[in-house]
Length: 262
Image (tube, rainbow, N blue to C red):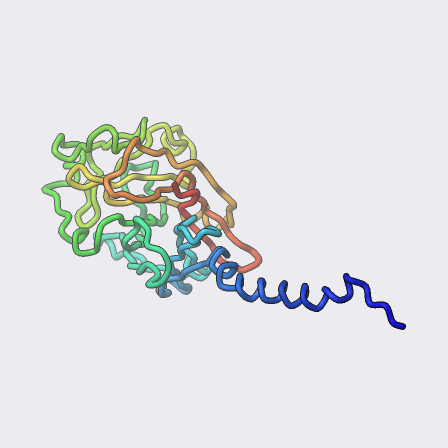
């Protein structure tokens, strides 16, 4: 007489039930995984750049960034004498995935830097993450670069991080006025490497801007710093608490990223 234990009788049913549960949970498990959504690549220099939105396990945006190949740092254009040394490159946001506060990105290659002298007058990139549409940005206009110091362009205090100021000389058409942190290291006789700027137009926030020198990028940095946050934002959504500038040797790419969105 062959005795079959209760456990042996139940084993096939237990295996079947477990398999059924795994199959049923499959879509839910897939949805809980973090995902990368990438925008269309754009040629810059001898390389390419594109936007990326990374989500957390719940599918919510965790970071917004720009990924570019090392070739982007070489073969860049230079302005003729007396010409505008700024070369802009429009990067579209991903067409799939969750929406963020960023409408589009413009990478500005500042081939000769820009004022103030002995601060930002070295070759560098301005990574503009625009909160407004391209159509709205193209309508940004000023009478002069000093409009940034005019009371009519000074936003409410709650929209400006503590310590940031909007000095004269930072108003740029089709861009906005620039709020800077005068306590940043580049204003204390240190070489400019990376810094974070807030942009405004008509007293409202219009862009977030990490600025990074070409020399610092070529050093292949692994850099992260807090982003000073204002008390409130013009556009509802989640905003960065930190930003990063990194070279990933394993993938041979650079990333400039707005991180810890909340």
